[in-house]
Image (tube, rainbow over all chains, first blue to last red; front, side, top):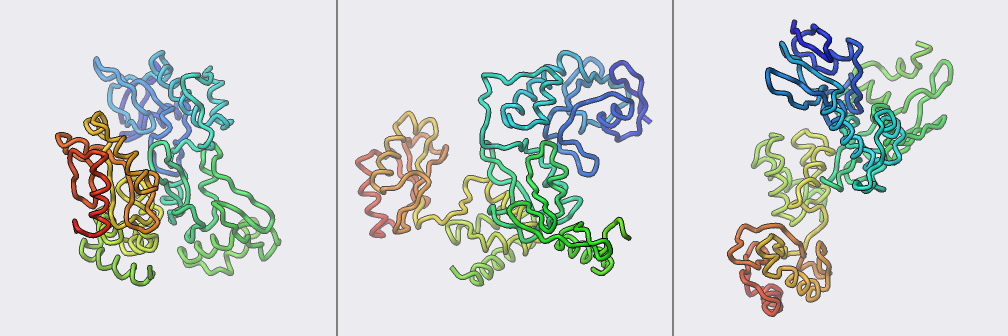
Amino acid sequence: MVNFIIDGKKIKAEKGTMVLEAARSNGIDIPTLCAHESVSRSGACRLCVVEAKKGKRAKIVTSCLYPVEEGIIIETNNERVMNVRRLVLQLLLARCPESDVIQDLAKQLGVDPQPRFTPDGDKGKCILCRSCIRVCEEVVGVSAIGFSCRGADKAIGTPFSEDSAVCIGCGACAFICPTGHIEMETTEETRKIWGRTFKMKSCAVCGRYFAPEDQLKYISKKTGVPMKELAVCTNCR
Amino acid sequence: MKKAKVEAKTKEIVKKHGRDKTSLIAILQDIQEEYNYLPKEALCAVGEQLEIPISRVYEVATFYNSFSLIPRGRYLVEVCAGTACHVQGAFNLMDRLQRDLEIKRGETTPDNMFTLEEVRCLGCCSLAPVVRIDGNIHPYLTQDGIPKILRNYKTGVTK
C-alpha cells in the first residue's frame, strides 16, 4: 500500500495504481476522453493532466499514466493544472469544432474557441486518441483499422481506405470512440461501418436481428462454440 | 505486375531478414528498392509473412516520407530544400525541373522515367544547391545545367 495526497485528501492505494483511478475511487473527478477501462492507456487526449509534487519539485503529468508513489502530493485543479487543461481543450476544440462532447467539456471549463487556433474542417470529430485501434487489437483481436500518414494528415481508417477483409462489424470501435467520430449505421437487417455493409443475423428463437453474421463466425472460430448455439440471441439463451 | 510474382519476391526478401516483426522497416526498404515503390500486394504479403495485421504495416508504410505507395519512375529526382540549398536558390531548380519534366512535385512523368520530389537536407550543404537523381548527387547545380543532366539520364549515359 502506498500513502499519498490528492487535493489535500490522504489516500491509500495499491502499488501500481494510476493516479486517475485512485482519484476516481475517492470521489475526485478528473476529466478524460481517451481513458477507458477495457483497453490499455495511451495518454493521448492530455485532458487528465494533474500536478504531481515530489519533494520540492512539482511537475505536470497525465494522471492516467502516472503510477502512485509514496508521499507524492497531487493537485487536480490548481491554477497551473487548469491553464494546461484549458490549453489542451482549446486545441481539441480547434481540431473538432463540431464535436458536442468537446463542446460540453469546453463549456464546463469555460473555454471559448480561440482566434489564434484556426478551426479544422476536415478532421471530423476524431482526436486521434487511438482508442478504436486499441480496442480492435486488444479486445476484438482483428486489428482491422489503423492510422495512416502522420502530422496534419494523420487519420483513422482501414488500410488503403478500402473495405477491410478482416473487420467483423462488431462496432466496438464506434462504441469506444469518445467523440462519436466513427459512424455506424444500423438498420434491421444490415449494419454499415467503415464503408462495408454487414448482414445481421436474426435470433433463431425470437427472430430479432442481434449481431453481424461475420462477428458470430469469428466468435465461433475463436472459442470453438458451434454456430448453432451462437444463432440464439443473449436474451433467449 | 503479377500478384504471385510480387508475393514470391516479398517472401524472398522476408526470408533474408528473418521473420521478425522488428525488421519490418528494413523489409519495406528492400521492397521499395526492388519496385521503386511499395505495391499493395507486397504490403499484404509482408503482413501475412510476419504475422502482423495489414493495418499496422500500412501505418508504418504511410508514416515515413521515404516510402511511396504510388508507383515511381525509374529515376527519382530529389531537389534539396534544406536551408543551405534554399538560400542558394533550390526553388529555382524545382521550378525549372517542373517545367522541363512537365510535371508537378510528387508526380511521375508519363513515360515512367522521372519522379520529382522535394526533400529536406541531403547532408551535403557545402555543395548547395543540390539535386539527387537516382542516388547521384549533382552539386552546385544551376538551372542551365538541368537539361543536359536530364538528357544524360534519358539516353542512359550516366547509368
